[in-house]
Length: 408
Image (tube, rainbow, N blue to C red):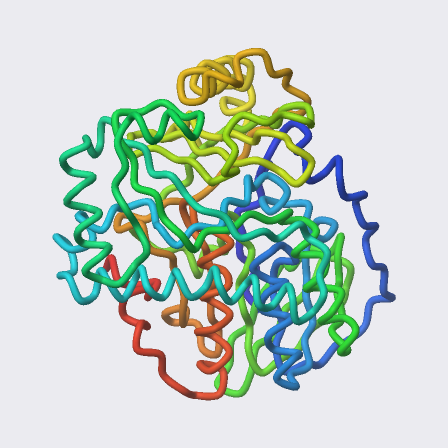
């Protein structure tokens, strides 16, 4: 069995709102033993939890392995804006893929947000899920005229967006030259959502090995074996990699990079924009913000091409100040808010703004679900929808779009 690096790193720093709100779960201890399952999942964050819930619902036996406590990796650093709009505007997607494919990408993302809401309701997960509008503000990437072109493409695709000017936007408590107002977004507490999904999977028999490191993998024609640092061995028909930005060597694809981002949450009781819509900019880099169930503002951004955690953490005071200035500029009513939580994290981006979902090349019976960019949770839900049938040998029409080897 070959021992491979799986990219262990310090995924985040500071204390996020979700950590403060959700008491951290302890590690699940098991005596070292041999486990057998239909599927072994690496990662107990939002992606692994969505996969575990979906697969146990379909009758699969599942073992989940995570070196941390559940939900304590990148999931806890998310700002959890659930958007169907991806990082690349439709204008860019149309230029790259053509209109029909661009429209299909956005429609499937739209359905994924809706599916998350339906899942939360069906499983009665208390995670502060709430449907929201979204405002996409004009910026240096798309000015008001280009936003009108973007709006026309969305409407042609049947996606619910309208163009509004500065005066109407000001009535919402926001400042920009223009914006697209869209339906179909949502907000959620990402740690509570992941915990609820994983708890549901455990209720159906899923085993969670947390505080345990997967240190070696063996891929064969009939199954996959994973060795852990505590002596446990997991033998499964399939391996699913849902470990976010800690990619094993054998699954690290081209065409992606790790980036740093920063965020903060204000004290509760803030009422700045009445619609409580999600807000983000057509800018590079862009800021993104939302409210919470208890009336906080959560804002993130200031992204930098920095993958070193020490360099990222050293910039946190500077980035927090930058985000505060950005909040005042976009929402003047937030000028006097106080910051209660501030944090930083890593996230991944691909060259085409699409996620990496599907079979891992040259690794039999192994699949990956890496949600990238500003749509991590939305893409994670889509990954569960795609991968579950793949394990049964079925094909998905979008396999080529999201393939891990699409960049060569």
